[in-house]
Length: 120
Picture 1 (cartoon, helix red, strand yellow):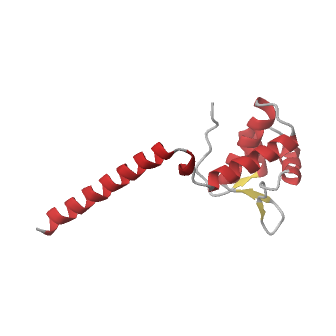
Picture 2 (tube, helix red, strand yellow):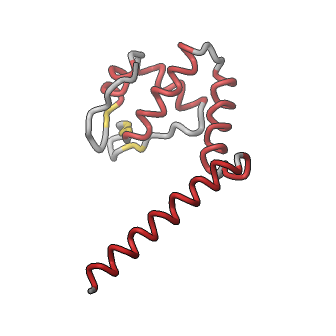
Picture 3 (cartoon, rainbow, N blue to C red):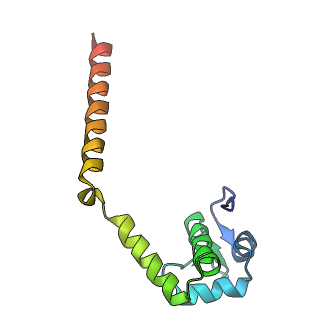
């Protein structure tokens, strides 16, 4: 079950701790240990988490508490997920790529037909 994240620009550490169901000191520890988790701080030094960082906190909690990863294991898993997310995986599944290509071509042809009809 996923935790619903309110639609806000910034979250204070207490709000993030409440959403994740952990103590604030746990979040500060995760910040020290996991490079990907770096909330910004305002002029008074208060941590401000953006929605993507709240999602990362929930992912870290799932890895540590539900999947029983160690901190080091969670760091490695997050690095692998980040690398995997930046590469297109079409090369590994040629059929999926070809299907995607057919869909894009079909969509573009449909757009061209629509434009031609409106031009007439």
